[in-house]
Amino acid sequence: MGKVVLDVSVSLDGFTAGPNVREAEPMGDGGERLHAWMAGSGPGGEVDARVREEVDAAVGAVIVGRRTFDLGVGPWGGTPWPGVPTFVVTHRTQENMLGANGGMFVFDGLHAAARRAEDAAGDKDVLVLGAQTARQLLVAGLLDEVHLHLVPLLLGAGTPLFAGERTELTPAGPPVTGSVTHLRYRVLNT
Image 1 (tube, rainbow, N blue to C red):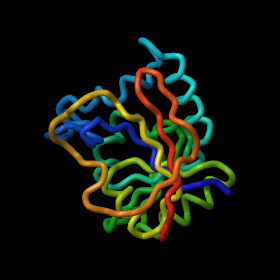
Image 2 (cartoon, helix red, strand yellow):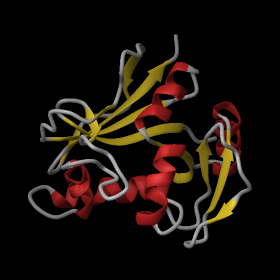
Image 3 (cartoon, one colour):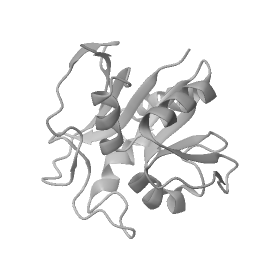
Image 4 (cartoon, rainbow, N blue to C red):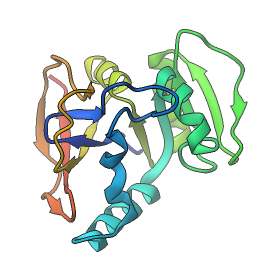
């Protein structure tokens, strides 16, 4: 069985998006720079490209929050990974929706979305997108690993990755450095 994994790019000052997140700037002001490493260009780009390929190969399902869905569905052109089911954590459930890229969006509450995503992923991982949803999964004891792509950038403000949650993490492999530092941790649910 796969794992439930928060896979997120984060600034050195702990933000997953810049300030002023809105439809015109879904990653907030300056936040899109958090994902520049994914292009695999620049110094260490071959390492970044390999990490990105590993992430893409491991994903079997995705969990996102409603706000991430609302802001991301347009730029994604469907689900975040083509053909991969995406479970939207929301109190405003609705009928399932087929994305333009062949992936299905399923709307449900936190625990049901996590259970259904794990079933859909099979032996692959469930990737979590969105800081608030990640925090909820962590607090509920449903998050297995945290994969951070630490970007050498100070945003100064924005969406914090964590906001007072406490848990213990243990390394799940050595750090890997390309243009950013890629870190993997197991969550010790205590």
